[in-house]
Picture 1 (cartoon, rainbow, N blue to C red):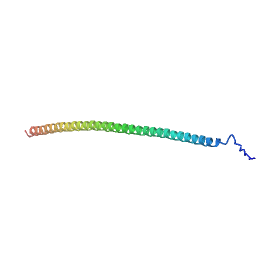
Picture 2: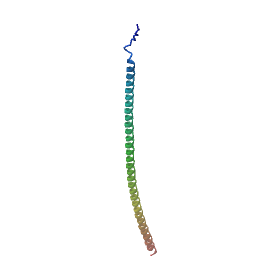
Picture 3: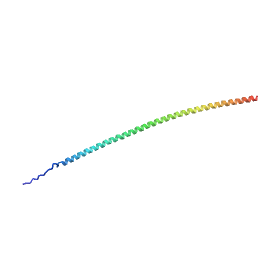
Picture 4: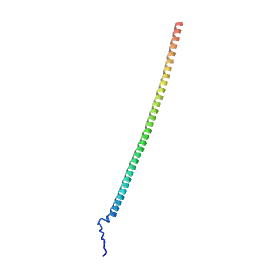
Length: 123
């Protein structure tokens, strides 16, 4: 008689490869999720930095516009000041000339009266 050996197979004997495949699927999905999260983070960071750069650009452009307007206003004010100074000096010179003429006329009259008084005394 031949002895037949019966090998008992466990119902879980073929489960080993299934668990490995499941673990590999989970790892692959985890990797895909991690890559997607990193990609989303990269996009958000890029958007934030671009927004910051645009803000800086707008602020610097605004500062330059303000500086140009300020320079224009200073130039206008200095032009007005120069015109006012020119007019004030012109008026001062005109009044000085008028005062000099009036002084000359007064001196001429004084000389006339002194000469007239001498003639009267001499005669």
